[in-house]
Image (tube, rainbow, N blue to C red; front, side, top):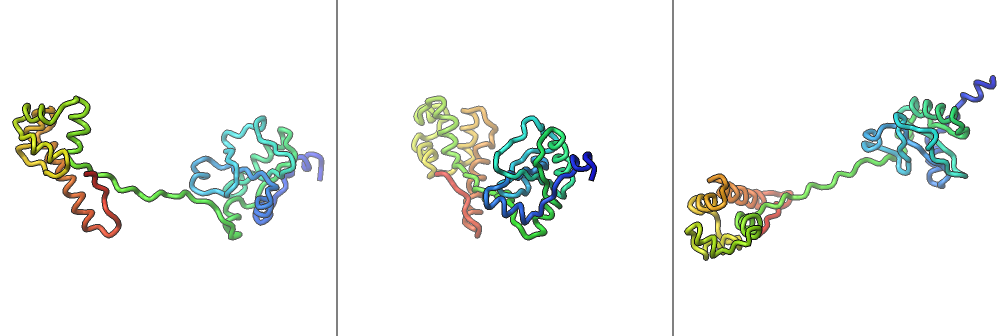
Length: 210
């Protein structure tokens, strides 16, 4: 082997050896794939440094640890290793076969954990009235009753979630707060439908707020 060949030679290591070194804390494993690839699946403990933005001048050096690069199948990691070797990082290795070989060897990877979807809270129209229209205006139920002609007791029941919006109330509230005429009725329909679906659902109820 000539001097140039020696300089260009990049040692390959098997995935099983890398796993052993990882468990012993003896290796810096660098994933040179792109961020989206890493996010989709990666080796636990691997440091992400994409080849597309790899800067040899800022490559981490950890004394006493082997440095192994890997990608998907071994092509990019080899290119990255040659780049680092040319910049003076003489002890760089790359993992033969990349992530594909790692999985073929039966070794584990980390996959994104999808959080279970939380049921969307369904708010009673009365709570919307209180939080979004009355409180910001510091408006009392008595004042609203005087403006709309609706009974103060009925408005109190609505805000407490114990009364449903009817067409007369929807029109009166729409006039008072410059909303669409059917806005308050639609809130009521959405609330009623969500409660009905929750009662029929086997997978879990939709959270309803007062």
